[in-house]
Image 1 (cartoon, helix red, strand yellow):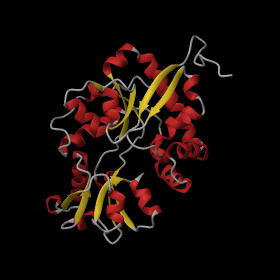
Image 2: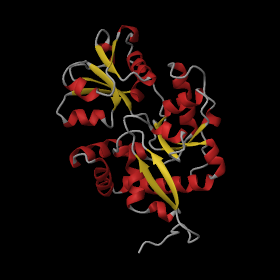
Image 3: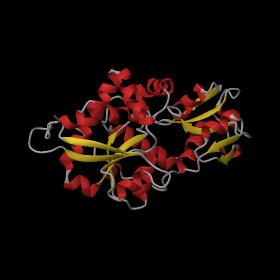
Image 4: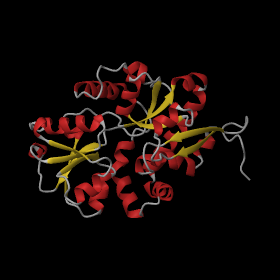
Length: 302
């Protein structure tokens, strides 16, 4: 009953594998909505999602050729390129930073973290976010006691193991509130960081050169899916809940929180990318200023 060649009738839809950066959550609403609504087939592609496991991540799947597109933290893209990987950002999954310092509710402002224990994952970007937030409030970053906790932000803060954590406000921040934990949320954009796209869609340059049309059609499908997800969140909720298995109430809270960051869908904005480059260089995530024009192709998305 399925008709092949929905993208114009000239053959079967071309498969495009998309590797996620994290377990399915509301940030991926546009991806799952595009599949659920068959927006991908309308553009002549078949989107297939690969979820990360304990032994791999989206960049590794992309580099090995097991994915055509990968959802990547923009800081990780910068680091990968600095290490010599010829990867190209072609789209923005979200349009603003998702990073924050989330503290116990009794801590009213970031400067109060001086002398306190703050949990970090161990990723370079965590230190940059913590420094930007603390210094943006006039505090002394060097006097903050950093503790490496890996990816245990929610239980570490909920049990009082640490006084604050670096985390994503759209996932861990929502999960903590769902648990009834009283928190203070300090988003990096409130303390001097520019508005850059935290999660970007990345392709290998060789693949982009060889089959640009296929990548472009995949981005068109994701744009349609994201626009539908923001316009009809109830429908998007069902697709994400099915993929993640998370409780409906939690997924709804995540989607409500991140919905404004999903627009405009997929488009990369040069001014935002330039701001990201300055931020990552200033706070030491990257050792030298990135070549933004080489790291991103803003003309792929239709």
